[in-house]
Amino acid sequence: MKKMFRLLALIVLVLMPVFAACNGDSTSKDSGDDGKKEADENKKFKIGILAPAVTHGWVAAVAYHAEARAKELSEEIEYQIQTSTNAEEMTSQLDDLMTWGAEAIVAFPQWEGMEVPIQRALDAGIEVVNFDIAINVDGVYRVAGDNEDMGIQGAHYIVEKIGTEGNIVMLEVPSSGSVSELRKKGFVETMEKIAPNMKIETYATKFTREDGLKDFADILTSMDQIDAVYSMDDETSIGVLQAINEAGRTDIKVVTGGGGMQEYFKMMPENEDIWIQSALYSPAMVKDALDQAIKILKGEKVEEVKIIPTTIVDRDNYEEFLDAGSPY
Image 1: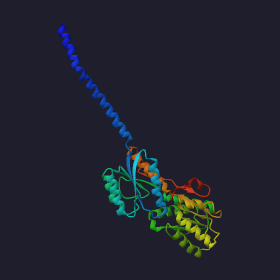
Image 2 (image 1 turned 180 degrees about the horizontal axis):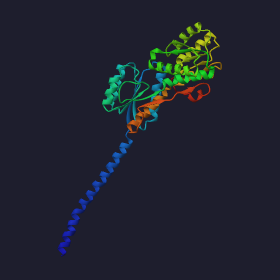
Image 3 (image 1 turned 135 degrees about the vertical axis):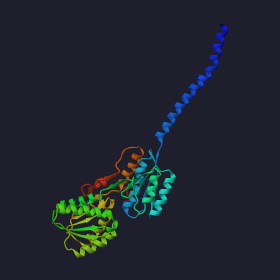
Image 4 (image 1 turned 90 degrees about the vertical axis):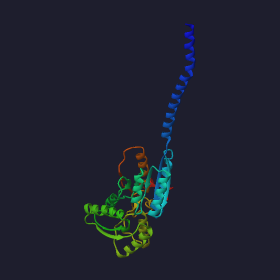
């Protein structure tokens, strides 16, 4: 009997390290799972941002606001910002971002011919959120302002300030494609509804202050009475206001604009005789595009197209939109 007890004791002594080792492996595995879970939670999304090089103050501000938002989100994302001067360069940069391991790309594809490279990114499993520009590629998300509503709001603003009759100069920009077409459509159709007796003269110009000055100086020599100017862009409007000032004209009571230019905002309270307005199509909307990309990567449901409503800025509220750091 004693021999049996000794044998059992010996067996227990032999097996105890084995049990301990098994228990040790189990603890180690649990710890490893926790470590992996913590690593996943701390993983940063890799997001690439593609924008055109500076061709216009508004475009410069897109990259500014994109980087500002990316820095705010630095605990959640790694990012790279690339700017390009044509479709070929942007395509090369998109390829670089794919090699870098981008999981999402926020693109402002101003150049024609970006459909194929963007489709290639989608085929590689990369999420793409376009800022402002719509392209014919399925699966691309988009964040943009409401160009047609800018025209609608411009019409209402002018009627509010001068009434339902008068002479209006509309400055369209055919070279901007759908941007001008939609703003014009919203303006003309709304005027037909709310002020059918309004006389509208249409002239072509460009989205620069130099063209606004040159073209509107010519218009002023051909029209004795102008009550309001429907301009679609803040830079154009700065040129218009300079032409009005240099001609010494006092008949014009409203000049609209569009975009969100700091210099233009600061002009609003300086001229009490003219209501200076901007339909805010802010380059800061690119922040929303970046936020959309993160939501998509997190598996959250988002709208395929997110349209930012128009905000009107004039001397009554311009201070709310001042940004000393903005390049535009």
